Image (cartoon, rainbow, N blue to C red):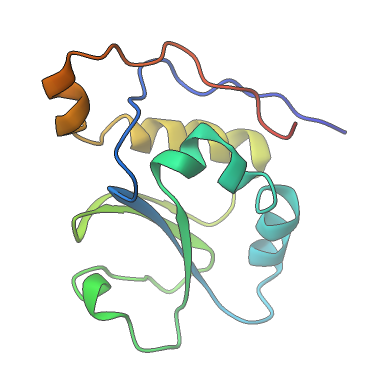
Length: 133
C-alpha cells in the first residue's frame, strides 16, 4: 500500500545540512524497527529528508559532542530536529506514518529561514512531493 501525504505549505529549501533529524533509538525497539520499515527507505528521498537529513544515535551510547546539550529522553524512538546544536522540536515515539509526516512538517516550519534563500529573494516552494513513491 502506498500512502500519500502532502507536507505542510511553506517549508523552505535550506542549505545542505543546516538542520538534522536525530533519531534516538535502541536495540530491540519494536517502534524503531517499524519506523525503519515504513519511513526509513523513503525518508532520504523526500523534501523533509533533504531539509533535515536523518542521523541515528543509540540512547545507550555516549552522545556525540555536537549533541551534548540535547536530551535523548528515555523512550525510543525519539526524533529531535536540531539546527546548529539547538533543539527545534521533538516527536516522542512513533505515532504511525500519517501522523509522523504531519508532526515532522510542523517542526520543520519552526526552522528559521535559510539566510542564502532570504538574501537571494527566492520564493519558497508551495507544496512538497508525495511520500512513499
